[in-house]
Image (cartoon, rainbow, N blue to C red):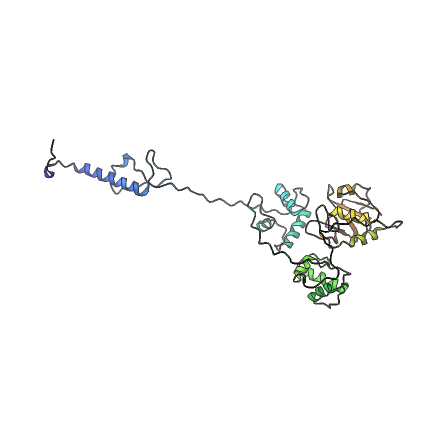
Length: 363
């Protein structure tokens, strides 16, 4: 068995060989500490050589000393396209659909008015431009996640009753007191003027009717005060329209007077009773009371009889809007109409916002 030579007699390696071995060991330490593999071709470099930058992939055949963390790149935000008067295309159709108007893809006068009305209701700047804030209020720009919904308001603990010209009683006194006028309980001309002035100051629809929105602005409906004339329960079974009086002769003013009975009734899609009307359900219900049985939709009603001149409109005429026809109202004289316009509104008398495309006379 050979014996090892004494240490002082062993042959020492050349200085160059020692330097190469030390460099290789230092390279291995660097690789283990920084997850960088050192190819063999770099083993002969001097110890002061600068290591190559770390890359996500290790050298072929050499496992990384540390696990590779996934790299997440920031997502670029989706641009919001601003729509304005004169814009056209599919985005305009989406806008019109969300506004509840005819989606023809053309940002014209009707769309401009609808945008401004929406901005006013939502407390936005009323400029007619559909930018980031207006898109957010409409549910978000198409293709982006909708903005988080605000925390819903707690449900009301009582129903609010609608007051209008001719109403009387304790509720009228409460409204008059909050309006700062004489509280005599009689909703007459002075109260009507005060209500309209208040609604104008608060940016509400100036219709002279104290409904849920006006009550809320006035501080809320007084739940602890009994109302002497409670409103009908919308959930109760609805009654058909009253039959016309046998032998009676009706005119346009009679039709308008009947229609005014339902001022303040909320729009309900597909509704055709006092629990809620859409536009054609309202006209059908009113005219049935004077012995005229109209078809159900606004388009069908426009075809019920030949038209009359739009320059010779009379109170009680049916006027139709848009092409194809998609809305109907009852003419109230002096450029005014009474109608059930759209979701979120009540039956009211107001100016025609666009010119009608046809009118028919039934009485």
